[in-house]
Image 1 (tube, helix red, strand yellow):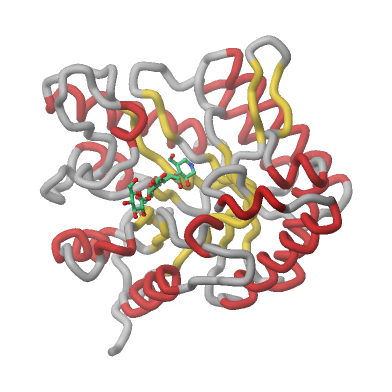
Image 2 (tube, rainbow, N blue to C red):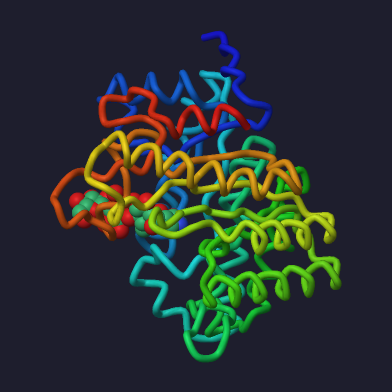
Length: 327
Ligand code: G3I
């Protein structure tokens, strides 16, 4: 089939996290993605838990399906993610020594990035590397990689990915950096320290992914976020928004009011970033309220469904979609 051109919306390419398992059964869901997106990323599929049921196995069915779907419809696929503390299969607990950890991480990245070499233009190489501690600032987060290799796992992951696909945009992706809390301030600082250290040592790194799971009941700390982006830009790194949604469990019950607040919050966030540096992409974490991770963690007390995403449960655009279209 001939590839169709993806829709051109605002200046910044827009995309969404996709549940690959639904593409063959949910026609309106699939159509919504094709209609609105220039980019897709698997909500799962490339995580260790999904790819690596056992040490000697790689199961590529989901990402293979998603990249075919993307290319048939004129979209690009992002890769999420190579080194993360989360979604790890149990067998990885048996990784005992630093040498074994290094071998496993390099083997994984070489195999996965190698399979899609030249076809996945942007990778979340390291996901959520920062942990905050209420009393003592933020540090590098614990994970099997951090425990066995120390923070050098980050450099190892980036160097390996760059060797295997020198054309890919390599991204460090993180959350909770946009709010006016001490924890967010600490996280911004710890992330900047990490980035500066990597840049100083010429570790291959191209961009920072700002996830943007925005708490709906909290203002964006515009100045702090803009300063963060300014510092990122000074390091000659790009920014992109990788997982935008608005956590609406504490927002008003009335749908219209809630959708307005959700849209305004996202608008403030996107403006604070793009006033300083134009993001290379904006992706939301899901596209329709019908399928979102938010109720898994942030169910509403009144039992009403969450509305964190640009399209409602019937795949109709909400105020949030209009805001994103402006960028
Ligand atoms: O596939 C199984 C299914 O077989 C089983 O019946 C079902 C019952 O629990 O679980 C299914 O797996 C779930 C999977 O999502 C697919 O829906 C896992 O339990 C669940 O833990 C998993 O959650 C995902 C989570 O990451 C952990 O991987 C969420 O969908 C996904 O939205 C979330 O995404 C993360 C980003 O990767 C990183 N940033 C934060 C973001 C939101 O938490």
